[in-house]
Structure formats: structure tokens, C-alpha cells
Image 1: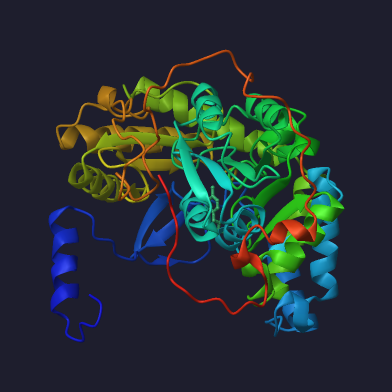
Image 2 (image 1 turned 30 degrees about the horizontal axis):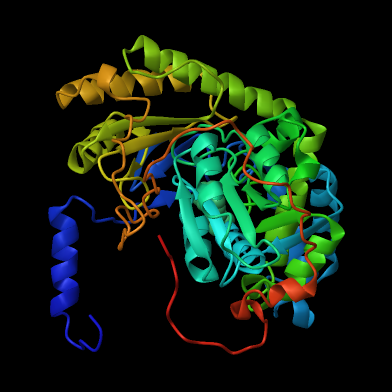
Length: 476
Ligand code: PMP
């Protein structure tokens, strides 16, 4: 592609995507993200929105955003460190810090930017990041951009994380320089990271820990405060990432931590420093949503009840779906084209659940990712299960084979892996992996403070270095 001014290569790449069943197109939704929408003009039940609590279209949230537009204008006009920090930003940060049970909070433009910013600030050249193989793409990209060595551990596998950390204990900077990063609720599978063990391991090894609660905030734990709150671990993590664009119904994201950490991020996170502050209407809308969540936490219970009904209804239609109240329900089909066909058949029966394919999920695990919302009814959930079962049978797909993600084949990839086996992340390193007693990794080391000196561990983090060279290390 480089230097090619014609369209030949682009056409060819598009044709390749087409052949692999991997092309995407935009579908048009009319009206707000309610339980039902008009999709390309056709009424459907919306079963793939992250508007989990139905707050994106709540009257109080809309009013707050509209009032903010009148009071503060539509845009912040500048980055936070120039003139873009307005009273409304400060207010939301204070409320979110309280909600997360932490001293301090910093708003970012989006969850994608927050993950890039946190990882880049906490790890740099000479450091090592340990990352779950199913972490979100923004974490994957944060790892790549950080220039740290990246070690991918098997999904939610603490034994493998421990083993990986032991193998890399000698490397990194003299002060440690290790960061563990994980989603709390995994976005495409709806399962939960073993955070208690990961926190223990981070403490025992002196590694830093960043947790992305994007899909847990507003949906999981006491009052929707997330997995960390559920496990009583809010204070045990260096950086908690949350988004405003999912259960909080708006747009943007935040990072919570102690006062020193937030001051450090403010000084070193490039995606915070070099990007326009979130728009006042989005911030005020998120603030109203947060207030609603705290005033009426029963919304979270309604979401869980809908998730339980959906799961039961799917199981009674024969799908391989476990009971539970996790609102994200994957129906793993496997093949890309079958997944697209199932998506289309379901739409024709009035249910919209977008097909999710690589690189969003690993090859061979394409799926419909169903997401319940608090604004659905139990009848909606049963209707959806019935429609999905009919759609599957029409295509000759057995519902019993659709559901819980397929067990991944043992990865054979070892240290020399070049290009990632899957674009979502590097393949985990498994050479001679032998489980061992947990947490005997090495002598606990004092956790290094996030002093500005640490920023020096990554030249890329120096905020105003104007560094532009393109090479991005993503060592395997
Ligand atoms: N983290 C996770 C786990 C996500 O699923 C997403 C988005 N789907 C993000 C971060 C990015 O958040 P945003 O959409 O606000 O950029």
C-alpha cells in the first residue's frame, strides 16, 4: 500500500476481506438507543447496544445534556491542560472518584484513549506488560504503543500469568517496570477476570495493575460499581478505567486511582494531554446518568433479571447458554459467513444482534454478541430467544452448538512468534508452561511510586518530546 497512489491494492484488500467473510458495513439506526429501534427502516428489538441501563435516552440525561449545551456550549474548545477544563468536568471527576471509592479521577475522551494513556504512562521501553489474551483492542493497542515488552497470558489464567511473570522476572528496568492489565468483564465473552488472584499476584510481585471496568460499571457489583467493588478490591488497583459510553449512556471515559497516580497520568498520558476535552453535554449527561444510577440502583437489578430471563429462554430453546445474570451473552457460531447469515435471519425475525468477527474476536469464534438492557421486558427476552432459535434452525445450525465460546485449541506459539496469530492480540506464550504453586514468583518487591522519574522509563511518555518515529515494539 505504501506509496501506491492507485486504488489497485486497496481494491485487492477489500476483495480479500470479502472472500474471508470479513467486510463490514454501517447499519443505520433511526431514533435513540431504546429497546426497539428502526434498523435501516425496519423495526427490530435492539439486542447489541451497550446502553445497558437505558440511560442514553433517559429524559433526565437528555435534559442535562441539552442544558449543558445551552450553558457551556457544545465543545470544550481545547485540551484539558490548555483551557478545556470546565467546572462540569471537575464535578463529574469528583463524583466518579466517590463512586469508585478512590481519591481521584481523570476524564479522558474515550475508553480507547484512556487505555492508550494509562498503559503508555505506566509502561515504556524496558518495562514489561502482562496482558490477558482476550483484552479489548484498546488495551492491545496501548501495549503496542507503549514500546514495552508485551507478554500475553492465557485468558483469565492466573497460573499462566504467574508462570509468565516468573519467566520475565529478570527483565524490565532496575526498579521493576512491570504492569498487569486486564478487562474485568470481558466484552465479547461476558466472563469475569479472576481479580482477587491477580491483585494478590500483583502485590506479591511488585507489579502495577490496571483494570478496565468498561462493561462492569453500571452492570455488576453493589450498586453497579463494578467487579472490583464486588470483590472489595477498589483500593488495591493502581488504575481503574471506566467508560461513560456504555451503562452511563454518554460518551467519554475516566481513570480512577489515588491522588498521586492521577496527577502522574495528567502529566504523562499522551492521549489525555494531546486531545480535546470531552464536550460539556456528554459530561453533563454522564453526570445525570451517574446520579440516576446512585439514586435508583434497582436499574442494575432489572438488567440482571433481564439477563437471567434471556439466558433461560435461550437455554430452553436449546442453545448452550449457562444460567446466570451476566448481561453479555455470546452465541458463538464459529464460521464468519454463518455468523453473518444468522445475524441477517435474526433481523428478518425482528431481532438485531450484530455479527462479531475477527479481528474483534479470535478467528473461528465469530458470534452474535447479545446484550440485554434494563429497558427490555421479559417478553422481549423470550421473543428474542425464540426468533434466534428459528433463525438458527432455518440455516441448519443446531442451537445446541451455539453458545459458550468454543474451547481454544492449545496455542503452539512460543517466543519467536512474529506477526500475531490473531490480530486481536499476540498469541500467549506457552513454551514449557508448567503450573506451579501460586504467587511464589519471587521475593516481594516494594512497589515503585509513580514518581515523575518513572516517566523517564519511557521516552515516549515525555509529554512534549515531539517524538514521531514509527516503530512500535510488540515483542512476543
Ligand atoms: N474497553 C473495553 C473493554 C471496551 O469494550 C471498549 C469499547 N467497546 C473500550 C474500552 C473503549 O471504550 P470507548 O468506546 O469509550 O472508546
